[in-house]
Image (cartoon, rainbow, N blue to C red):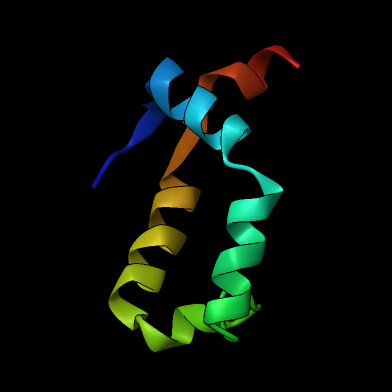
Amino acid sequence: MKYGFRKPSLKRSIKARTTGKLKRKVKSSLNPLYGKKGMGILKPKKALYNKVYKKTSFNIFKLFK
């Protein structure tokens, strides 16, 4: 588990910004549960990991805002 600040990744940042609306629309049309609130219950181990990770780490860029 990571503690402290998150190391920013330029590659992941660009990928997140360029994943388009069309791709999300296709996924949601194929899978009716895609992007719905509460779907973390289906994968409790991953949901627990994400919850702990968000509470124990922070984004270095948020400090400067």
